[in-house]
Length: 269
Ligand SMILES: [Fe+2]
Ligand SMILES: [Fe+2]
Image (cartoon, rainbow, N blue to C red; front, side, top):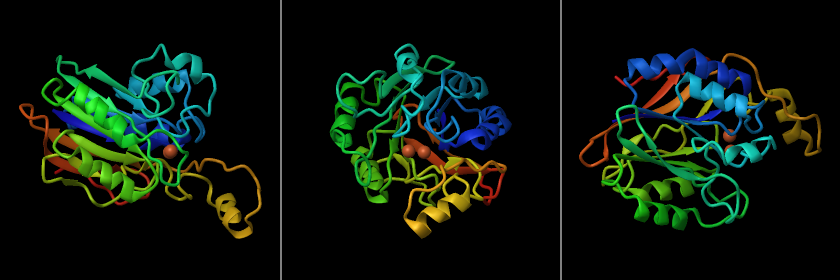
């Protein structure tokens, strides 16, 4: 199976990069399943029903979330009716929506997607490792043809620990949230593809996707200043491509994908 996980889509630049590149990538890489992180799709903060529809139309099978999932409050009543839109897995019991799901590919294979959120330098929530353990026990590889874990977090250590924790039990563990792609794409010893962060779909002439002037002022003055605004130059697409072995569900190949905008390009050979 051929999978793509796309990093955080940051505002209009990010959405434009999705529309400009994802339909073609879907064809050229013969992708069976695509996850897009949508937590910043609405001007950097949250996501709406209309933006979900845009991402689905461009080729996303599932839209994952993160700490910004609820920034646009109209998504709260919507999320229960859209099983393809995930919010973080390890939020308190009773939270609307779901943080995991089993989804079909066009040809009838099935993919488990998990969207745990990390805790280091983030809000205090339930343990992401135990939440992932429960999900992998209930739906192991074999029951489904692929398992994708989008681990939304700040600390590289926590994300790498999740990769090693799930090694041999997931097709791919990839981080989101930092908005910067890491150069550590690899297949771990027991067969799980891993990259600490996918990066973002957004303008890299910025501070993690926000206009640089206001962001710099915040660091200089340590005072509340102007509201951060999304940078709106040409976006780079940042994603991770994985090819799995259908018998085991484990990774045969992993490669970073970067296209457009300012970052040095990368495409699976
Ligand atoms: Fe983000
Ligand atoms: Fe985030």
